[in-house]
Image: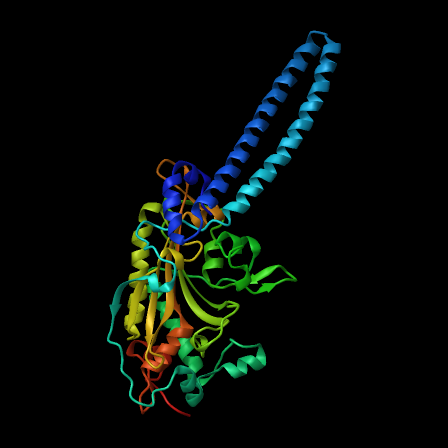
Length: 425
């Protein structure tokens, strides 16, 4: 959530940066300014009445000391009127604060200056591309056909157990999934991230704090009996570990990593681009999370990008890095890089990672602060990145490495799978 102090002190900057998102920045900011002014004027009126009440109390005390009981009783009657006015102003202030808060929750984060303008994914900027695009021979198959041929996973079994979009991994497919998780976690540990195994359900406060509520409520699975939400990413519980905390400067940076299954309703998804593992409702993902001082967060973002690049290169996957345009960024992000791998059989790029700097947008909701050199608490910057999302990684590995003998396992992954080749059983 944007800070009202920022909106008051930098209105033109906020308008310019918010305009990159193709929203009605003028209307959003004008309403925020109106509601903030309403809140402040109500607060000022309340403060004035409370000051008057305090002065009245002193006056009553002085009258009683002077033996002027009649005048003191008249003053007490006026105090009753003041109490009623103060109670009404407190209710009005609560309503004004709620109206401002609710409106601020509808305003997305302001993009950084380097975020390109644009409305759709085609407007994203390609930062770099690595690796040769593989050319498969005739008869090459997409990963969903390979999965059936080699017995690696089944979406039909998932339909039987749950519904569409819930794959069941079996045999070497299950071992490949587990191997990738361990590989990603080990690489993150080598990079200084501390592993966390968080709950898979969170309360509404946690979902609100990282920006899933109210923006993505329709995309989350809601366990209504207990009012809990299945997590769409490990970012939600891991970041919320620090909700309400004031960290010491010596505790930064915070670097955490966690593997979890992730759950997304993906309402309205259909068509050829969502076949197989391209878009599923449950998938495994390893997530890296960082909490940084503001002056270090952009450098931390680049470090996270380098980390994800290293994973993709170790897996021998051709990839490209995108800088998302304002219209394609997530609600909470100030800047986002996407990493995409080449799917050789489908002949298309598949997104496998988003790496974002949220600046103070999440920490303002989280009330996550650190104590600066001035000994005062300041909002920290939060970042997170997929390192990596497995479903599409598996799709690309299967398609890109199919050979007449079987499906080749990248060398870096073989110590984790225990086999160099997926073969037909």
